Amino acid sequence: MNRTIEQIREDFPILSQNINDRPLVYLDNAATTHRPKQVIEAIERYYKEINANPHRGAHKLSILSTEAYEGTREKVRAFINANSTKEIVFTKNTTEALNLIAYSYGMNFIEEGDEIAISIAEHHSNLIPWQQVASAKKAILKYLYTDSEGRIPCSELRDKIGPKTKLVSIAHMTNTFGIINPVKEIINYAHDMGALVILDGAQSVPHRKVDVQKLDADFLVFSGHKMMAPMGVGVLYGKEEILEKMPPFLYGGDMIEYVWEQKSTFAELPFKLEAGTQNVEAVVGLGAAIDYINETGIENIEAIEEELTTYALDKLKEIPYVTLYGPKDTLNRGGVISFNIEGVHPHDVASIVDTYGVALRAGHHCAQPFMKYMKINSTSRISFYFYNTKEEIDVFIESIKNVRKWLGYEPK
Ligand code: PMP
Image 1 (cartoon, rainbow, N blue to C red):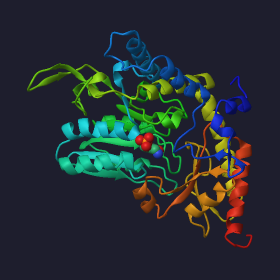
Image 2: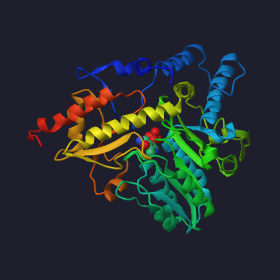
Image 3: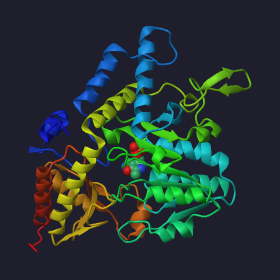
Image 4: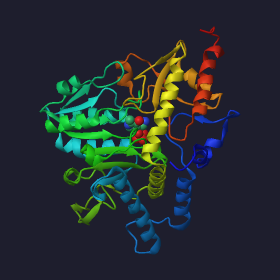
């Protein structure tokens, strides 16, 4: 990487802010990331110089808007190595992309008695849509349960995925314990059984190379806001032959070919699945975010985060009243760390460290069935992006050491 961490941080105006009179230490990147000025400026330029409805108009601004929108589609295609831009559909976020698959594919191709397999560690976005499909189609929703570290044992694949399985939907990386699931093995195994596989890439695509052709994923979904782009844009990748079979999810303008009084025919891919005016400025921001990631190097991002995660895990392990969840090293785990402080509710942890300028997340992390399965009420969670530093982790560790003091516990 040809830039220092100081130069990188200068690109993110928000990071130089003080929160509660302390420098911001932002460790909530699994929830959303910050935007560099390159993304902010790309959106500003779009508003100042283009701002027109794409695809529809013959006037210059509409043509420029179409170029900006479709230009990002090509950047996304190259970023995940899809075969064609027809396979890239813009959605609002990961959640909408998963719902699109559930409503368009699930409700039309899943039949009574079919099985859908997901892991117990899925985010609610990758769980509730399948409950809905299973209940509407009288299908069976099966769970792959994890071991105590949050990993899926091979035996679960053999026990839960079989000839009746039609869909497997799985997080590439979990947002609770940061587990990187063995998705290549899962995809190979599911394909052998005749099932399609959806990868929830919300936590993986921003942080490590994801190549849909190498993985042979049938679908991949992710959110722009977790990779420095604005909120309000997400991506659905699907293999062309599968998307081709799927009926539209939403109906209206932009997704049609011809419309008569009593029937309509629909546009070709990907437009068939993008009804109505899209969030073009957010898509433009996503294009700038991908440029930023490419200039930084996704492998550099992964390496920086691995170093930060090792550093934080080692520091947390030294504190006797901290319980760490998930693997204690960085083998097949990303930069998300869940923990609890003995005797202190995670919401109190989050509020107290906030007074030190530290932003972290507390709660069930939209994974209630997993938390119940793990017999945990809630956790505190820190999560990194490549703009974080070891010095920030030191501030976080100091703030953690003060939590019990604040609440009147004696030193351990
Ligand atoms: N899946 C995973 C693994 C996530 O971490 C998240 C966001 N926390 C989502 C899905 C949902 O993302 P969004 O809210 O952007 O739709």
